[in-house]
Length: 244
Image 1: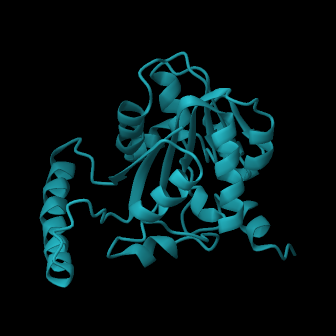
Image 2: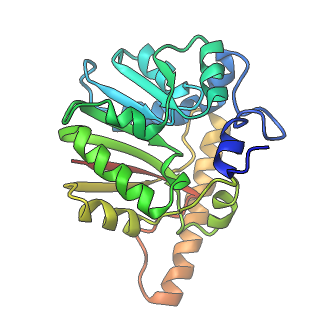
């Protein structure tokens, strides 16, 4: 049996859980669609004819929706063959089973407008992450964007998300991820809470509840530190936009 924990899990990444990670049909993307559309609408450049690489694309939900919205030059890679097979079963185009670092090596310097890593960089150790950062820096055009979604170590429930996956190595705060990105030569880093996205009555109620709970935790931080913590990011995950 495979004794490398990453290889063992990635070979079975879709099925090694109580319920399958990937949906059986395109309609199964609906629960995740508001989150993915939020990324496209708020973090993608408006120009559609750009070069986009989704590293660790999973079963390709973001690629599918981006293509529907006119971003035809988007492609994705994932190390898990199960993930790629799930994407192909859904009819999603431009996906390939490939190691992330091998995919980056194939790209010319300054060739990409956008690189995406959704729930990816937490799977690397610190030295591996430095290598990844340098490679993304190399392949992005000046002003290019790196869109990241990661576990947020500042969240009151940070450990819940961090330990959700056996292959997670790292969690971040808005200060730590900004620190390493600025130290690596990127020009701008913006971090955002992964708030409930309003797309109906139920999600609207969740959003209101989130804002109330957020105030409570900020009040706690104020008592402890004297700082009202306006820039605190308290969601279990956070979105990060990094500009070269």
